[in-house]
Length: 432
Ligand code: KE4
Image (cartoon, rainbow, N blue to C red; front, top):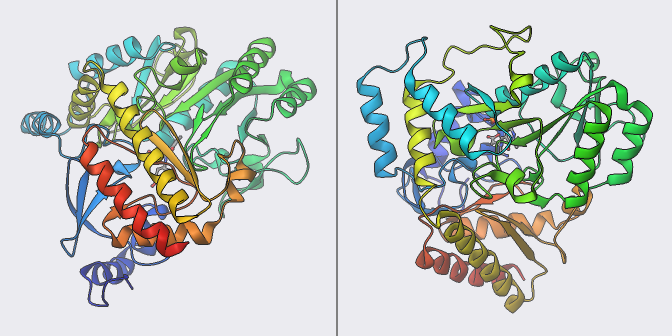
C-alpha cells in the first residue's frame, strides 16, 4: 500500500495492472520492488514535475530515465510531435527527417561518421555487438559488472565464478551457450583488462562499456581505464563500443567520448536523442557501418526505425540542447542539487555522499563516492529505501532503486532545487 492511505488510486491501478501485465509494469524497475511500496501511476508531466493518479505533484528526478532533459511536455517538442503526427504516423519508407537527425548526430558526436536509427537502447547495443562480431569474425565480447546495456541475450550475464571465466546468465531463458562468449570484468580494473587481452586478445570481437556508468548508480570511469581500453582494443583489433545510451547528450553535448577525449569505434545512443519518444541509434566509423545490411553482410532491421513522429521529438530536443550554455546551466543545477543534499545529510549526521556529471547524479549512503560496483553495492540499501520513501511522501521522486542514477532537466531551476533540499533536510533528520 502507498504510504498515504489504502484507497489511493495508485493502489487500485496497480492491483488492476497486475491482472493484465506481469508485475503490473512494462519495465521491471518501475514496479518499486527494490524499495517496496506501490508505484505511482503518472497522469501528466510538465517541466520538472509530474502528477500521480491521486493528483499528487512530484519533482521528478527520473525524467523518463534520461530523455526528458529539456523538461516534460516542452512546448516546442510537443508541437513538433503534433505537426509530424498530422502528416501520418509511420510509412515504412525513408523520410528526410531521418537524414537530418543522422547528419545532426554525426555532426555532434565526435566519432560518428555514419549512424543507423533503431527504436530502443537494447536494439542499439545488440546491433553494435552483432556488427563488431561480423566485422571481426570473432565471437568473444567483454562487458563490465554493473554496466547495463539493455536486455539482449548475450548481455544478460553476470561475472563467471573465477577471474577471467566466462559469464553465467542473469535471466532465465538465456541458454548457457548464448553467454559463453561473454567475459564479465570489473569496472575501473585496468590490470584485469590487460590480463584478458594478454590471454585471449586475438579472439575478442569487442569491449562494450558505459563510459560514465549510470546503472550501478553513477560511477565515473577513470581516464586510465578508458585510455588503456582504447589502446588494448586498437592493439588487438577489437572493436571499442561506448554505450552512451544514457550518458550521451546527458553529460555534455558530445557525450562522454568528448569529455574523456577518447574515440570509440562504435557508439550506442538513445534516451535524449528521442526526447521521450522511441529513437535510439548505433554508429561509428564508416568502414564498420558499411558492413550493415542492405550493403553489407550484418543484418539488422526495424519496422519503426526512424519513425517520423519520434524523430521530430528527437530532432527538436537536439536543437534545444544546443542553446548557448545549456550544459553549463544543467551541470551547475545538478551540482547544486548534490551539494545541497550532502549538506542536508551532514547536518542530520547521516552517512551520505553524492556526485554528478553533467545532468546526471548519484546518491550514496556510504562515506565515499564509489568507483567500483562492489563499493556501490556496499552502500546502506535499507537507509536508501527509507530516504526514497521519505522524499516520495515529501513530493520528490528519485529513482526507486539504490543502483540507479538520477537526472536533472533544464527546468529544474533554483526554486525546484531549493524545495528538494529543504525536503531532504526534513527526511534526513527523520532517518538519522
Ligand atoms: P532501452 O532498451 O531500455 O531503451 O535501453 C537499454 C539501455 C542501454 N544502455 C544503457 C546505458 C541504459 O541505461 C539502458 C536503459 N537504462 C534503463 C535505466 N537504468 C532504462 C530503464 C528501464 O529499464 O526501464
